[in-house]
Image: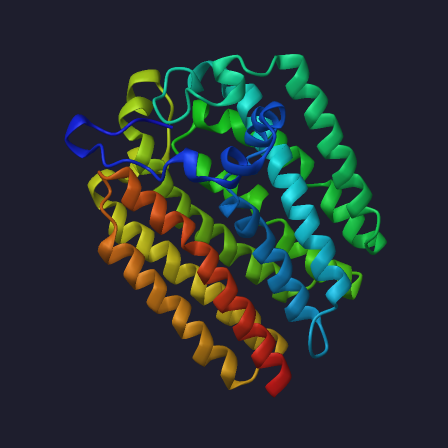
Length: 308
């Protein structure tokens, strides 16, 4: 959550180029931005673990109905999470260059309005959740505690990215349960790997804000790792691939999985070796590119299932 130093103020992608500012009616723009509709990268990062576990649990190609439900659920719950985060961080956000224009921090939307939007989003999330298997409903509902806890972690620990990983990848458990009606070792291995993936990409993301974080007393793994960020992020990416491969082996995926998943490994090499941690635009680009990792892994799992 901090602004870059004066020597590294390469701009982030202009918010004036996003679809909300270009096409949405003016009265709806603050609400859409509060829900982060103008920055959809986070939707995909929440969705992919759901899709991966659904594909791992499927016999052949995954159930299209479940994929659609998890897509809608990811959009709704990521938006709800952003509203919760902005409610908790509205005073911090007002002091940070990158976030001071957010609707709550800038005063475009009142606190009451934000709570009303949050209630609507959580209601929509419940509608999606109850379409799933009863076991998946119970597991999905259990994630709400982590979602509510996460915004406080940056005040208490240098590891808020760990708690984000715990909350953001819960779908790795829900997707499996939606297919199988229970949990087993494979989704737990996938979940553990996904947590490492989130720590990696969100540490890169947090480097955008490290200077302001120091000023206002907010903690992150970007500050914790400092100059050692690249090798440590690389280690977490390796741990993600290990967890993913272990889950794949547990369900008996065929060789195409490993061939395509190697592409994700190559993508991680590109991220770590090319990111400029003092340049916000570089950090943001590598963060967003993890959506491509998600697609590669999903294709790898599906191909491994079909060929098996």
